[in-house]
Image (tube, rainbow, N blue to C red; front, side, top):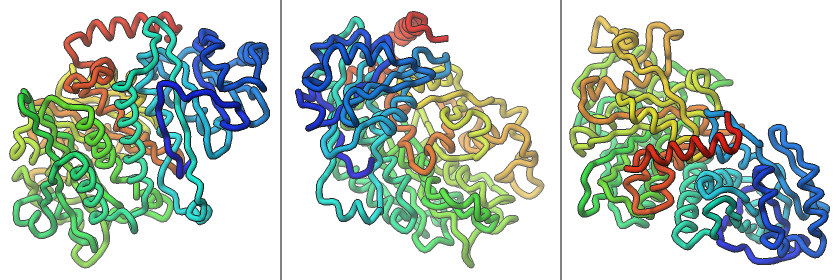
Length: 523
């Protein structure tokens, strides 16, 4: 699926399947609502109305199903007829799977996505996940012909008009953000070290007319960023703190997104084994998602101050590497005794969130990271783990996950019971827990929050995406859609306003979502 140009159009136009293979996707009930006149131009003459109706009758999704319509040139695929309350009504994960498995081959192809308008944003991001950009296969480098996939949405339900130009622009930017994040995460460290990641940040800044602030190498040490510096000081390419800032006129609040950008994690001197180290190029997934989301969000218009803070380092091994027993002073002024150099993400993020508070005066701070392997045990491979000091935002994260397709589920937030895991006789705290069977993912998040202070008056949200950042050997671009939806109330874009759970009419929208869920037999 690599080396593909993805284009969203209000109408993909007519073409016979032999000339442009086509895949039509939707819930079974939704596909039955599609008018033959809306799709016949992409199927005739080889697929007749009778064949189409027979194919729909043959579909029996459990949870999905597909049926060829004409040889290997045309197919229809059905999404699950119902999903649980902890899944997205869009069935976004199944959309990605069906596109990967059922889309016919060819240099020019078409996807017709049949859904309700409320599912367009999540479905477009799900489709984007099926088309990764990064590849180093030699056959791809020799291929001259660029592949092209056109996506058309057929909207059913009450708001059944075709997507307008503004909606197409929104989903295009979101899809581009997903694919950007996935490309960075897929790229190995010999091509995506801290130098290269800074180039990616500068490129986004140039596109948006923003000059990044970069603090790097020994300057980090001099300015007190003991977390980022201590993690990355042994690497060939020095660590960095980079900030992209969007500051529009009339802003009423300041938001900071802080991303963990560990471009490779050997574990440091607490080194990983030969089976656990492969894949650690993905440890920059939080920073990659924030870069993709920042680009898309600013392009769509954002009314508040928005800072993207990237904590970049390679956790390497060398003569200057941090040792277990070393004590570092972080940007908060608090001291940390290192008892596990493989618990490095929380160290760089602690510096990042405190910088966001002290230097950027952020009212809302969200950090996103591939932080703990325990996240996959706590919330699974598909749901990010969310922890926050604010109950409203906890609920909002779950709702944003459902509306965006980037699913999220809460972790326990209970510092009075869990933070004692970091007790140190030598410093303010250790960096790794005493008991690994006591809410590891929650404790890891609490370490970050402790540097802000558990009495910090602002909103702090921690999102652990360790497992959802990839599906098999490919990155997913997870986090981009979640961020865009969660903060959509501050966007100038109407589609993002609608998928956001925090706008003025959020309760009304949530009530409507619940009614829609019941109508569509969600449980």
